[in-house]
Length: 387
Image 1: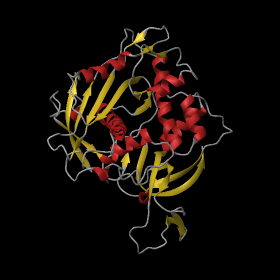
Image 2: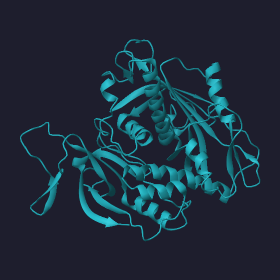
Image 3: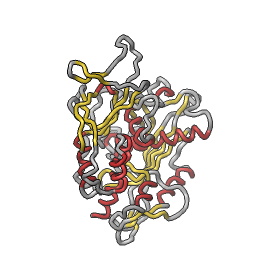
Image 4: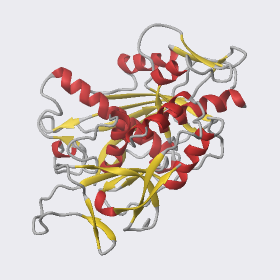
């Protein structure tokens, strides 16, 4: 299911192709379409640890609060009943919109919270480069990366009030990029391309207001250019933290710790996992390492029937039997992650990505990092393996 928002861009010299009003014109369209399954996918990766969302990650938990219109609009006055709860939920959703926008339109695949990068410096130096806070106050939300040598800062905002590039408030968001510096191995400050992505949410009670996405391209201070191993090591840290978050969701704590710290994983510590096969659609036969979250009930969801595993049902006549949701990582990408932690602990420029998926069902979402979220009915377990 897609919902539309208005679109406003600022300081983008080259408009991303998908956002152009026409392919050959460097002019932005006035609107943007958002796939709710992919929006939730980013929300899920950014918000949850091991605990599964309620009711179901394939059915965007906020979708029940959206009006049945083509635009992105909440029923009533929005999510939450108090100002504090509304701020908290709009912030989380704003971060999901930020990740979705950067992923879909600027080819940015990997995300790590800036706080995680700052903390990781205490464990392992980035080949001599380091990040420093230059003043007090809020800093950008993310260090994110397209690859090991192309990385960015990003700040996300979500709110119900108006947003304007000319406002004092938007200028205060720009100042967050001035509170951190990336310094190379010679201690010279390096400029970092950054993005501010702010989303305004429309509600039923304010019918004249439209939901809109506002994106700007600022830079952090600096004069030098980061190249070679300086940049690759920081980019590798971002990718490692991204997959550490995913490994945690796969119930792989040891793997998550190795990825978070950029440390090799000894061969004696095996990584047991279940291989699943996608059985339907244009990607039938693609294999994933993962598992499922069950909605209601605690019994096994699969049983052997005629020497084959099938989804179990205690009452085949009922239509309201609880189902599950699959979460996993494409097998070749999972193997590549394992290869990193069995080796140097560093990601390389040749690390693979999953080709952009073609839409085929509203409850299925696949991202370039290899992760998938979908109804369990689309998958069948095929092998137990240790990596």
